[in-house]
Amino acid sequence: MLAIPQDTLNGLCPRTAPPIPRHAEPPSGVAVEEADLAPAIEMLERCERPLILVGGGGLTERRVYEQLADRIGALLGTTFLAKGLFAGSPLDVGVVGGFSDFSARPILRSVDCVLAFGASLNGFTRGHGNAIPEAAIIQIDTDPAAFGRYGSVDVAVAGDAVASARRLVELASSRIDRPLHDPQILDTLAERDVFGPYDESGEDGIDPRVLTVALDRLLPEDRMVVTDGGHHLGFGASALRVPESGRARLTAEFAAVGIGLGSACGAAIGRPELTTVLFIGDGGLTMTMGDLQTVVREQQPIVIVVMNDRAYGAEVHFLDLEGLPYEYAQFEDVDFAAVAGALGITAFTVRHLRDLEARSSLLAQPDGPLLIDCKINPRVRAQWLVDLDAARRPAAETAEAPA
Image (cartoon, rainbow, N blue to C red; front, side, top):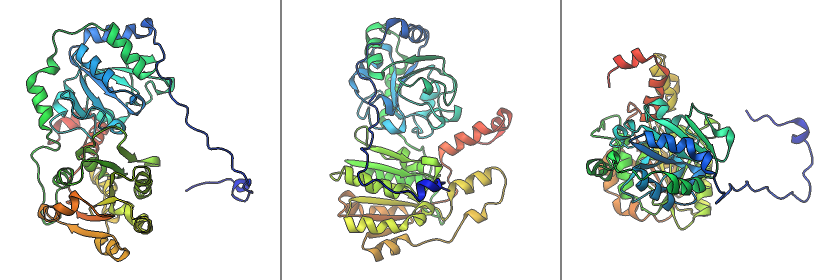
C-alpha cells in the first residue's frame, strides 16, 4: 500500500517544477590521517588471509585496490552492485556472499580479515554468517551510520574509500607470506565453477543453474544485467558476468517483485549500445506484463529471461522450510512466449538445454527485444536462501541437517 497524504493527493502542482536535487557526491581524494588508520593497520598485521571487499560506494578507482592487494597478500571481491570491478584480475573472487561462486566459497570461508570499502556488509554479502564466518571486519565508509548497520564490525574508519586505500598502500607493511596468492587458489578462481557439479534438470524443467551458466556463455558479453526480486535472483545474479562495474542492477526495493521490467527499460534507455539482460520471475512479470508493450513500442534491446517456476518461488521455499503448506503460492503455467509473440516480441520456450543451444545465433546477436520463457525445476533452491535458512536455525539443528 502506498499511503499519500490527502492534501498532497488533492493538491495543486506548481507550474514550474523545482529542480531535482542531485545526490551528494562522496568526497574524493580527502586525506585520511595515519592515526585514523592505525587500528586497521594493526589488525592487518595480525591477519594472514585478508580479503579486500569493494561495494557500490568505493567504485572510483580499481588500480589502487589492486596495489593494496598485492602489498598485503589479499584477494579482491565485490558486492553485487560493484560486480565486474575486478574482471580479468587473477585475484578476483567475484561477488562475495549469497551470490558467490561454488568454487570460491571454501576460499572465502578461510579468510581471516575483510577490509571493506564502501560496502554496507548486509546479509547478502555476509552470506547471513556463512560466507566469511571467521573473518574480522574492517569497514571504511564516508557515512558513520553505515558502521555495524547489518552486523558487528571490529574496526570502523570514517573516510573516503579510495583515499583510505591509497594511504594504506603507503602505510601497510608489505607481506612476504601470502597464502591466498598460492597458485592452486588462483587456478581455482580462474576456472570459475559457479554452481558445482549439479544438474537436476528433468520433467519439471531445466535446472536454473545449468540454464544461467549456458546463458552467460551464449548471450553477448557486452551487457547490462538487471535482476528482479525473488528467489530466482540467486541464479542470474551469480552466473552472468559483466565486463566492468556499473553493469549489474538488483531491484529489491521494499522487497517487492515486479520492479525489474521497468528498471530494465530505464537501463536500456541509459545504455542503448548494450544488450540489457533482465531476469524476472513469472510472478513478477505477471504483475507488470503490460510494460512489455513499452518494450515493443520502443524496440528496446532487452533480453527478458523469465524464470518460470509456476509459483511465487520465495514464498514456496520459505513455507516449505517451515513445514507449512505452500500450494496457494503456486499457480498454473503461463505461456509467456505466446503472450510476448502476440505483442510483437521474438520469443521462445526453454525446457531443456538443447532448446537454448538450438538458438545460439539468435542469443549471440539479438535483433530487438527477445523473451525467453524458461520452465525451471522449482525444487532447486538458491544458495542465498540456504544461507538465510541456516542462519535462522539453532546451530545444533543445522549441524545435523543433510548437506
